[in-house]
Image (tube, rainbow, N blue to C red):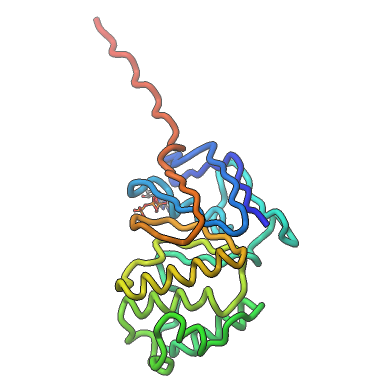
Amino acid sequence: MRLVVENLACRRGVRLLFAGLGFTLEAGRALIVTGPNGTGKSSMLRLIAGLARPEAGRMRLEGAPEPEDFAEEVHYLGHLDAHKGALSAQENLAFWRDMLGRPALTVAQAMEAVGLGGLERLPVAVLSAGQKRRLALARLLVAERPLWLLDEPTTALDVTAQARFAELARAHVEAGGLIVAATHAPLDFGPSDALDISAWRPARAAPEPAVSA
Ligand SMILES: Nc1ncnc2c1ncn2[C@@H]1O[C@H](COP(=O)(O)OP(=O)(O)OP(=O)(O)O)[C@@H](O)[C@H]1O
């Protein structure tokens, strides 16, 4: 399986954030996306996840059952954790497992894997920021999806949780999965490619020549 992105362009409001962006990511590799604030890393992930429409370009997951319509093959982890605060951690994960289908780890195994064992029954609203992030990461483990799209996945995680998540990500890659991760922090997800999104920023229009009398 491989992710192919061709000639992608993204407009937000009146601004063209990037254009002509392309890459191929082979199974068993991660793509680490960097760039200054506001250059479009989150926007690119949202385009690939199918949550927004590109201004131009296309992507496909070669080797997937529906190469051009791959929502079923993708885990998208954005800035927001998408939990239901009144439900317990266990209930939230069970919801995602049932909704996404293709179960992988059990809820209990996934919670243990991200270091949330013992907190299964607490309402998510009372969990700390790092615990909520761990729970969001556990979602990746309860349903099988080859392509993980991760936006700043280690935000709010302590050093131990960051290392533990990096191990889980490397295991996914080693098993033939793919990861595209936007980050400002160094991430060791195993065999990786790098993409600096600012390289695809469109050139600014030349300023109008000054008019002299
Ligand atoms: N709905 C929107 N309407 C207009 N502009 C938007 C909208 N959403 C985002 N933008 C703008 O698009 C640009 C890119 O945002 P994006 O979140 O993709 O950047 P980023 O590279 O992920 O930044 P960061 O490193 O801060 O997370 C920003 O200038 C942002 O203000």
